[in-house]
Length: 209
Image 1 (cartoon, one colour):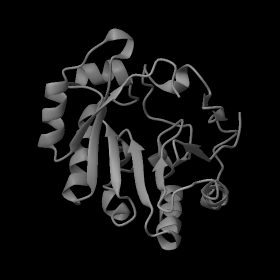
Image 2 (cartoon, rainbow, N blue to C red):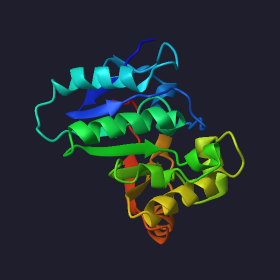
Image 3 (tube, rainbow, N blue to C red):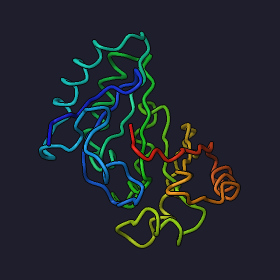
Image 4 (cartoon, one colour):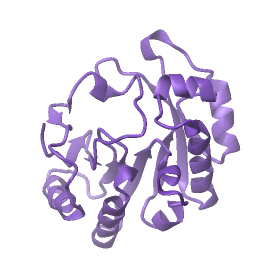
């Protein structure tokens, strides 16, 4: 266990807000290891505040070589489950480092969790959402992502469209090649495009980073 809220990977700054998630994806890296390049991402607790994150962010920022770093909310959990903290940290970064690109990697369940469309509140703060589509059908999604509620796949698609409707760059991603398994990438890409999103295939990395 640790308290790694901010970490570096390939010169990009990643923010690990929470270990909680509404999915239990069978291909998730955290099922097999506790770290990313030696940086422990299992948190001691879920009590960290935006101030805690900002403090670590400032420390990590000093280690980055580029003048225009990219910040990605992505760790061992679903970052939008700590929506207020995410928003406060994004506001701080945009106010103090306006040239910084901010991306959120998400499973797309936030609007279901909060029972409202949260995307408009993040316009101007988040430059891009990367949403885990993960499948070409509900049954396949349920098998691979193992969500904790029944209409999760539809909620993912609704979230993608909500981002596109706000004219925020959105990428629908899938994990391809998990233990030799192959998705219908053409159908996944069609779904993404019909929702107004770009499409990205992420090759499964057996040993993670």
